[in-house]
Amino acid sequence: MNILLLKLPRTGSTYLGTLLNSHNRIHFINEFLNPFSNKQRVLSHSLLITLKLDRPLRARLQNRKCPALHSYLSSSSQHCVHGASLNPFKERLAADDLTQIVTDKSRVVVLVRNNLLKQCVSELSVLAEKKSGAVNPHQAYGGSSVSAKRRFVIGPQELERIRRREQLRERLLDLANSIDRPKLYLTYEDDINGSDKMPLINKLADFLQIDGNDGWKPDGLVKHESGLFRKLVSDDLEEVIENFDEVRNCSQLQPYL
Image (cartoon, rainbow, N blue to C red; front, side, top):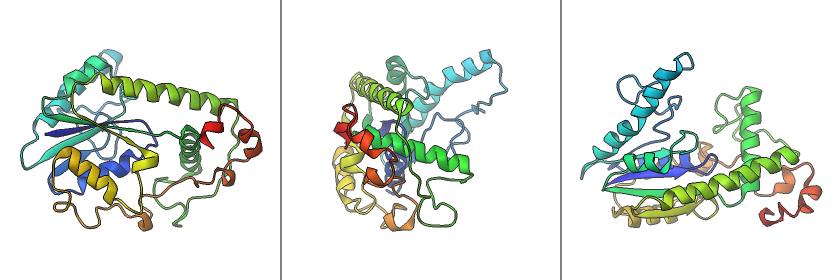
């Protein structure tokens, strides 16, 4: 058996990947096909892509990505389950590409976020922290365990961002449905909880048919209080949205409030 996680940005995939990696039989790579990922330096035979490569060479390397991931997933064994996450749109993967990647032993986990307004604000927060010079916005900001408090104005550009995210979410679900393999659908709101990971562990254990009690490291490197995984945006949107009254009166955004 192997695991393929399909996801979009800011949906809790890093948390989920780290949780999977905390099982002693699972080896999981976040964003396997992303050549700039910190977790994955080399895919296969120097597949790192740099901006200096000419277009034909980049195209040839792109064509080798799917077989590389398929080979990695196929190398799963009874004692070592391999898994990887993918953002299909970032990697420009179509349904045909995904059928090349999955194996007859693949199980597919689909992770989405329902509150697209919070997802949008979370993305804006990450962009703001990166622009400010934060080395890793997922960790403590400025030596503190609390992210820099920022307030954002939600305007036409943000509404367009949310509309695009809604379209991508639907396309992701369509892609997942095109794969004829067992699937587990998770949502950020219902399943990603930094303070209590046991409900998610139980779901994963049942879906992957592995022991839900043994094999998981006690801490799993997923600690809410450690600051390694924390919400960048308050659940109270009024704290982070400057023009909240205007947002509250926007019919397009009311479902997310």
